[in-house]
Image (cartoon, rainbow, N blue to C red):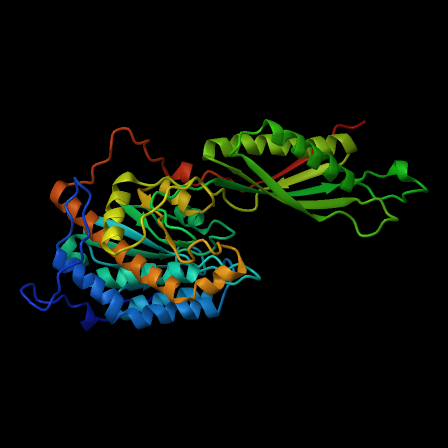
Length: 447
């Protein structure tokens, strides 16, 4: 379904006359040393549009999403609210988009440089917006509203992507497969956090659903006829526990048993578990998965059971920050008065990592709690609706818009953004979606 086949012109998107003396000077926002910045007056007006003209609408959007949390693939209201606001300000909106019911695409401009702004809006079951995705969505929409009247002047095509299911489901990997990021020159978003980080890094994450199938039997009458699926799970967990000693420090394995029998007077013929594996890079994740799956096969072999291993969602790849884009962001964040960023090792996982394997991307995180609490904690949900959180929303929107404007200016003045020769080449679509959700059944050898 396509909304607004012909976008309605928005008077607020008409740029002020270039000679107007009413445009204030932009705050100090030093550009990267080798990259030309967008004009100061243009950036000042972008900031004014976001923080003054569109402020109430953006805060209202964030609060509505926060107050009506929707889990992965069910974010119908959040997606509609974002799309409606963009449509009201001249964006051509397609919803749903790319085969996902709660994804959308909104575009404006026809310039040669295409910048994608990612809107995340899924909530955590039982915790609401304890990861602050309401702020993420509103910041990306805000950046888009600030850029709208200048897209053609800057040589930009602005593409806002509603990206469902970040918390579970790897929605951006699915969007990559459907072609949502084809032709994109840069992808951007911001994320709330308990500290300020520019060069964000993340773990690669894989998921695994495990099911052992045995044979029921009475535990005293004919126990020898049974095949204990709970024992198979125990053997596998012991093997994983022993494996951990030989794993590199940044390789993590963790999971929970979700079923292991119903009553003690019956040998369990079925057991299930959910596991996650994490590694510093996608290549390491593949090796770690093989070693963990071997532990579950060992459980089946030792007990005479059958094991079915299912990968329920795409792998989340490690995030690769683009050096040129983050230099632009750093200068703009400093101009906004954001705290000095700190360096942090990988501490989270995101499907924006998959995007960063395909196109240049940034994912700076913005401090909204001063370390008092972190994502996925109940207190963080409250912080995502606090004045400090909403200031980060506005700063993030302006910073993203300024960075996009600087990128377009650099492209126009230099033909391309310089990429240091030492940087690892970006992978293609295959590497960004290398997950192959699958179901693997392994039977023990007959005794």
